[in-house]
Amino acid sequence: MTWAAITGWGKCMPPAVLSNDDLATFLDTNDEWIVQRTGIRERRVTHVVGSELARVASLRALACAGLDAADLDLVVYGSCSAEEAVPNTASGLQHRLGAWKAGAMDINTACTSFLYGLSTATGMIRAGTIRNALIVGVETISPFMDWDNRNVAVLFGDGCAAVVVQASDREEGVIADKLGCYADARAILRVRGHGTTYGNRHVSYGDTLWDFDGQEIFKRAVHGMGEASATVLAKAGKRPDDVDLVVPHQANLRIIEFVARRAGIPMERVFVTVQKYGNMSAATVPVALVDAIEGGRVKPGALILTPAFGAGLTWCSHLIRFGARVTPIATSDAALEPPTATALEMVNALRTRKDTRGRSQAGLNEPAFPESGAAPHIAGR
Image (cartoon, rainbow, N blue to C red; front, top):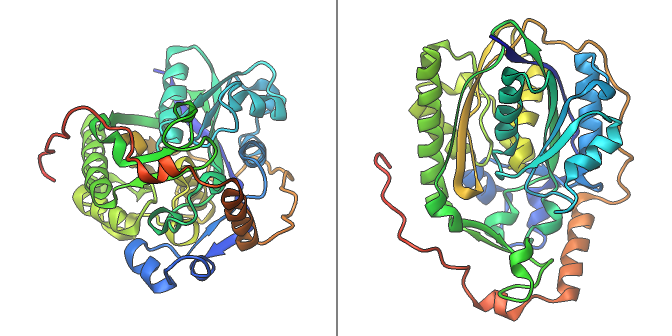
């Protein structure tokens, strides 16, 4: 049987840090309020487009794997903040890297995009369609954040990480996965104004209003990630005690704690980055995975569980067997140009531009598009 081993990894984090105290300069909040409810202390704000973050992270991952971009068979760009709808952003990354013979696809399942992409590339390698792939999880959420909405502005940040997977005859990479979606609840996490639906109704295209039902998202996230984690462990014939490290989606510290408890895994074996990055949507799991590897938390042959959820409401979990090598074959000198403004200055500039354009009064006064049918009760919630 052919497997899809993770052979390279790399990240690229914007250097500009937005603290809770920075947010308190324009929101009715403070550091204590945010930390108690989310565990988040700071997050990053990008000064470059997502494909530039992805270029640097990808070059670092390729060097780590000892693979040239020209030898890539597939580039997967996992994100809900793509730079354009047409053409896809993956083709722009392919061009930046010089991956001339690679196919290129975008995947948007919100926060689970990287992991859905990992499943896609793994399946294609197992089928013999490709021999290797680059999977990127990248988000630049700051440009379309509703910075005046305290419920969401404190949660999200920008970032990027990438992995290389290559065909292997050893049992490495994803050994079990489970993908799912609570589509009946898709309206509880919605960004209005970001998509072609908003041509001339409800809210002006380019401005954004976020619908975010925190309590319902919490319930669905815990249930979905818990169910998916139990499923992949059973599929692989493993028990919670067999898991060396959990690298979960980092939306909220409380959610992480609940999911670990449901999985029967102590927090000592859960890798947490939410305090320093916030929720980076599709970038969250790969950035945390790279941090865990670089921090010595991933040992050769480690069994890693990666539960996640996102808007849609998509959810998933992957059981990953890491290979024998946990150090890079080589390193890359790729880096970002330094920013010319602080994170707070960039955010205030974004707020000023939105105020100058003006918000759609219809968007402020009308509800989100209704969904047909009532949400069914989920057993065990």
